[in-house]
Length: 88
Image (cartoon, rainbow, N blue to C red; front, side, top):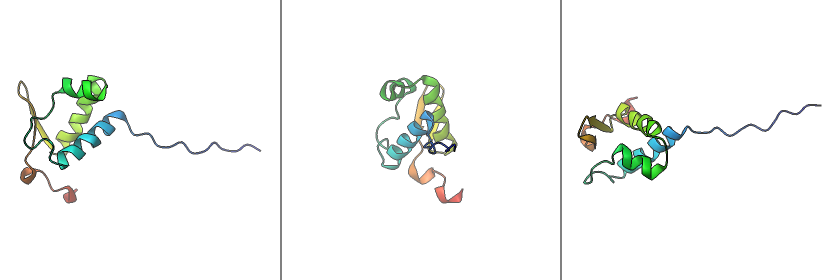
């Protein structure tokens, strides 16, 4: 009789893995006194395509953790100005 294959583990998309790592670092205060890394720096650090990094940064912006200004780069939103994570 045919047996179904073992369930495949769910794979997290690369941009979500990058976003999760950056969210953890922001939560630990890593970027409170340092500038937030540029897209190019993050591409080099994670070894992923620029589009993957952009999607990860979109997640951070959507959660209110960073703001981005053209020509200035991204900045971490101060902790007291971030949305309350329990409000979602």
